[in-house]
Picture 1: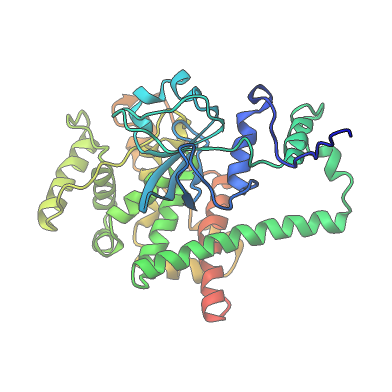
Picture 2: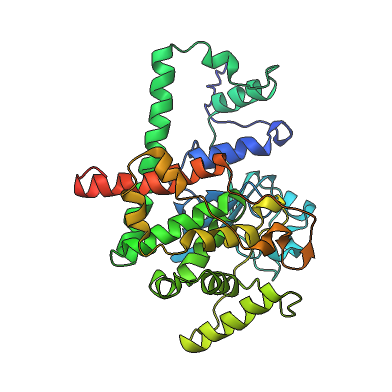
Amino acid sequence: MKKTTIPTPFARTSANAIPEAFLHYIWKTKNFDIRKLLTTDGEPIRILDYGSHNYGAGPDFLNGKIDYRSTLWLGHIEIHVRSSDWYKHHHQLDPAYDQVVLHVVYEDDRPVTDIHMTPIPTIELRNLIDLSLLNKARAMVQSRYRLPCKEHIGKLSTFWLNAWKERQLVERLESRTMKIKRRLDEVNGDWEQVAFEFLARGMGFYANAESMEQLAIKCSWKLMRKLIHDENYIAAFLFGSAGLIPDHAETHYVQELKSTFNFIQKKYSISSQPIIKWNFKSARPANFPTVRIAQLAALLLNKNSLIRAMIEATSIDEMKSLFICRLPDFWKSHYVFHKRVKKTNLAISNQSRELLLVNCAITLRLWIFTSTRRFV
């Protein structure tokens, strides 16, 4: 009697045929069998937070959270086609990967360790991915169109396409409002602190969103509010807390920042805090953290209440105008403290103001409406 082989729905294809970007998609959308996950050494593991996708240099997903061996681990998540790619890319020698707590691979062909020779838990996706998804990914990669989904979108009716777009917008806003709720619980309902953190995160855009949010947490709004009527004090507090003021001041502007921050430290008994990591490498000059912090300082000037400023605006244009600022003359010829350039154009672009509008102002207004049922 002829033996019948029942096809499995899960992918067992060669790692050579797997693009790493596909694994990023699988991880980000959780399109794999997440039931009873095990590491490659057979240990149960739970993913509590899959992390935020990092489009710049460094680990692929930042600030993940896992439950492994009855311990809560907070850190980054790195994804590779093969686990040996960790060594191929020399991550074991790179301090930027020192906080990786989970290695996710399609094929586990070699155990990996961090810079301290500590083994890193690994999940192999090889038998957890639906084969049909892999086939669709291949078709998209091999598409002759600039936008690979063009062939498929054309098959959708206008009704379903518009419904999908609206749903994407709603899901994005709902996700952000849930983050507001969690953060409000953590800071005992301090709306102004949460608004400050959202604005700072928004000002970091893709390259430094996490770092800018850490800066806002470090510079609490309660203290920031005492400095809000002096732009030099605001800038000194932000740059000093960010650890970006040079030790050797070469200009009057930098000297002022340095002396003002020293004064603020002594007056308010500010102790040394953990250093924030800033990303200059994958950012354009106009998006350097020095520029974005200078813009944030200018935006905060005379804003006694960020929440009030955002909810009292009566139109989209008025809300967008909240993100217009004027920088000190120093920034007309600098992107960073130590290097002078001929000319800069550091006005916050209209596109950037629209992003801040959606990611900050509208999100906060939506949360106020959903929590109070009062339209703002």
